[in-house]
Image 1 (cartoon, rainbow, N blue to C red):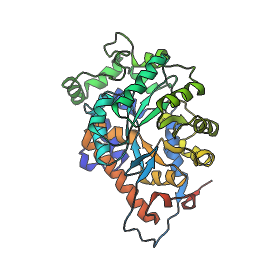
Image 2 (image 1 turned 45 degrees about the horizontal axis):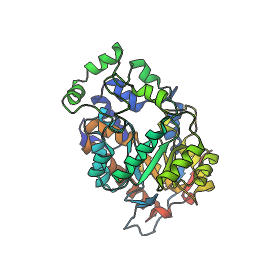
Image 3 (image 1 turned 180 degrees about the vertical axis):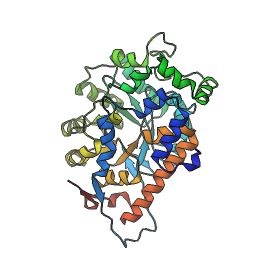
Image 4 (image 1 turned 90 degrees about the vertical axis):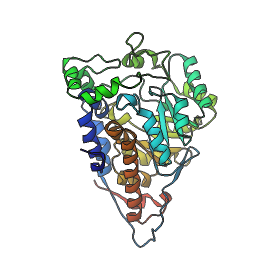
Length: 382
């Protein structure tokens, strides 16, 4: 299968599955518990229909949006995700370059595999830094100061991961960082030698944002222990309010799902929220972000930029979210599978495919700008 044969999310997923060892593919592809929420995230978009207008003069379409003061050329962005060089040696470098080419936002994770500073050099476009709240308050302040010095415009605090989700696919293969695979997992690595060659012939795997705290040689702290030992489950609204004041710029909370929490985010001065269930990887059985979108937009959409992620596989999914009032839509697996399959060319092809689908969809909807997409364009099926 060649990259030129990939026309949609499912094609990229198949290509990634052919290249990646099973444990790494399952790390991207899997969710928590029974993966009910993971499946529901995409199914939620199928429960409503678009109602197009015609004869509206759509020769020129403007897909740009402004989120947290940053202008994006299209209404999707690459959500920050961890461990990207595990999937392909280019990792965040590929994503940063592809996002810059398409004029959209991307994010570097605390568990990112290149530094904030290097990502900033690759792209001077919109960028967020996604971080976690640590028991060590000094480390939290250090991470924010580093992001500011690197020129990052917006901070994105993940609030739904004070402990790791129950990802049973990883347990079955023994997947962990550093690698501690069981026999089944090692066997799957053995049958995908191209990934192993790629891994062994490129620079050492690092976590630059945390390398003084999390070691990849198995000595100091593994990724799983990072979540259970370094993150602070006592994190409260007062803690976040202090961080918002200290940052002094656009600050976003990722993982908001309730109206009450959305209101609190607006009250403490956040400029954005991302409705997200972490791609179905945390609390299984939780509602989809798309299903929660309308009531949260109604509650706080006039005070704060409401974004969402989870399950987005098509341009029409994006149009539906925008019609409900989302300012922009985050992509995760949508770009991770093409990254794993083909590096930067894969991410670029995926983003171009999404851009084309959104533009085509807007024309078929009779819209020349994102602001013309409203709930009048949607009908929900009971």
